[in-house]
View (tube, rainbow, N blue to C red):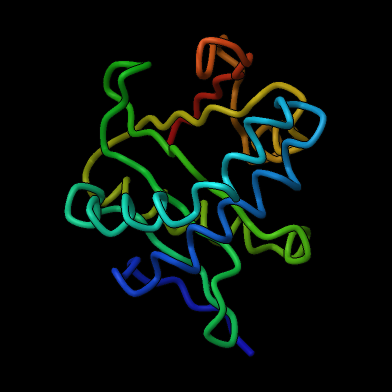
Length: 163
């Protein structure tokens, strides 16, 4: 079955909130405090409600589905608070069992194509230090340009992509 990338719908909110909790708990175990990770499961209903309420505020939020199941998602904005004149991918995630099959690259390229159509030539992505996805972003051509603190506690590496 072929994966489908589509705009996030309000009906996706509950499944997406659960997927976010699962991905954070599998990706960041040992990198982020356990209490912080547990909070994703504890607050799934609130996350789903927030996703519903923000649907119109986040126009560039897409899900990747396989057989009608959300297996990944990407959320980006056409501007960044971290770097001038750059778009920013705020989230690019896949459920662990679907990683390594080209789906992350598929989501990335989908976003890049949309960003380039808007005339934007630079893109940044932040990735928590210790996350294996740092290597993925380097492989895609991202150049490390520095770091900042995520949630005032966790080191986030910033990568610049010249599109």
